[in-house]
Every structure is written in C-alpha cells, then in structure tokens.
Length: 215
Image (cartoon, rainbow, N blue to C red; front, side):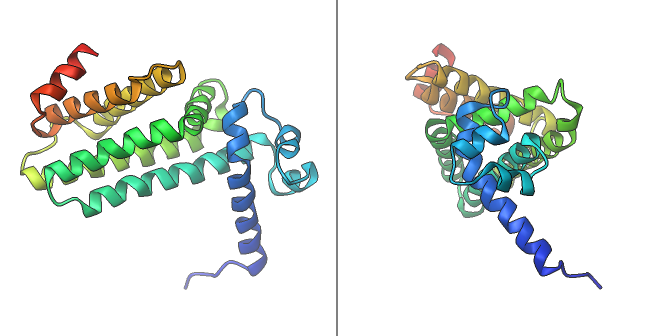
C-alpha cells in the first residue's frame, strides 16, 4: 500500500513550487552566474530567509524553477499531439508552438541552456539536467511518433538523434532572436518543417522549402 505524504510535506512541496515559480523571471533575467538567493529575494516579495528555508542554495532553486517550466513546455506540445488529426494540423500546431515560445519566452529558454552549459562544469547539475533533457527528448519523440501514426511511415532516425536536430535548430533560433534577428523565428520554423519532411516524409510546400534553404 502506498503511503500518503504527510500534510506538512505536501505543504512544504507546494510552497517550494510557488517560490520557484515566483523566482523564475528573475532567474531568467540574471542567469546562473549572476544570481544568488539574496539577489532573487531583492527582486521578489520574499525575504532571503524564506528562500533559504525552502531551498538549500541557488542551484536548488534554479533546478526547481526550470523543472517546473519545462513540464509546462512538454504539456503544451502534448496537447498539440493529442488534438491533431492530420499531418497539416500536427505540423502547423507544432511549428506554431515552437515559434510562440521562442518569441515570448526567450529569457526562460536562455536560462535552460545556461543551466545545461553549466552542467558541463558542475557535477551537481548533471543528473537533474539529464532528467529534464530526457523529458524533452521523449516529448519530441511523441510528436514524431504521432506523425508516423498519421502517415503510416516510420521515423527515419533514432530518438536521440532526432532530438539533437530539433534542439540544435531551436537553440540556433534562440541565439539569433536574442541578437535582434527579426527573421529568426520564421527561419527556425521553416527549418523545422524541412527536417520533419526528411524524418517522417511530410511534404513541405516549395515556397517554405526555398525560404529554409536560403535563410
């Protein structure tokens, strides 16, 4: 029989979640290197003592915040996968979601890539970063698997390789977008369509294909 968590434990976890969410924007603006619990407290309604009570250090808080944000990201794409009934619906929904999040949530994605880069140097990051990374890979694979169901064609690359391709395109688009490239989002979307056409045999309109190749 499963043991239910004690009310105190549940409330503690809920409070951590609330604080992690509240600190997310500050973390996204400052990044890992320039952030401390004290600085986060100065940019929020919570005291340094409160943050220190619920989180052992800034790493604990950052991982909590990023993990919660990425869970929301995964749900967003899962909703697209669940509701699409044709290749066009799935393609347009997936590409639209990628563009929207790149356009409106760039600082949050920058925080994730900052954290992932830091894991190359900080062993304490690696297990959590690997877990988040794996959840994103599985999300991409669910999208590709849905394409395969609709088209009747298998995905032409393994999950890890496919994820690396989409992640690379997204990170490239993010870098260009943050540098002020006004075409970054549209270029990323066109390139994603092109890669999908190669992976799952979904045709890409000639106009969009030319845009991706010349961008």
